[in-house]
Length: 208
Image (cartoon, rainbow, N blue to C red; front, side, top):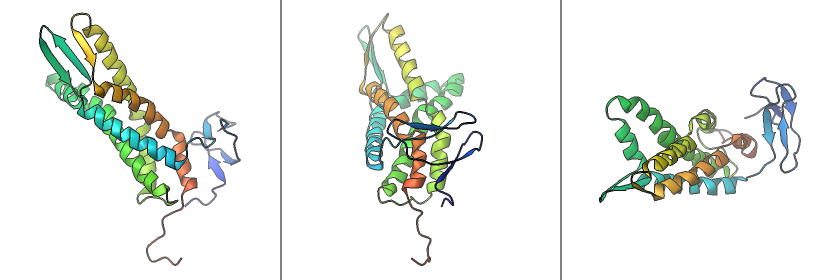
């Protein structure tokens, strides 16, 4: 529980400020280092939870359906994200397969699960069990989600392959494009406001 909820501390230079109401679109910045402190509330808990569930559906599609289909002289092949990671894991390319699987599969999965967990409880105005570790994990995972980098690499591969074979995008590729847009929106820095929007869970044995 925060002792002084009306105050906010800059995470970069530790300057302390008193919160004030912001108009839509406004952002509060640190006077010392110009870092973003907080912004006006753009997405409420219900909308963020709905977008998180949409991201979960897109994540499943991106991992279960082919990303691209390649046809050459009557032969046809297609690959999902998991199959791509498994193919990279053969031989010396395992050094590429591990960060690929972490940044494109494991980290987005962890983000979606953690967000759904804290937001489902936040709808009732309560903090989820393990709220603090979950929020710290979300902040730590944010820079490591690289769906957009993977999508760019796939598009470059499609362009190169299309010069000598027939290449068509699969449902997984479109799902990745949607996931690339949704993840930064639902897991941005404004998620920290859940500390203010929720109340600590009551302790066992505590008197009401």
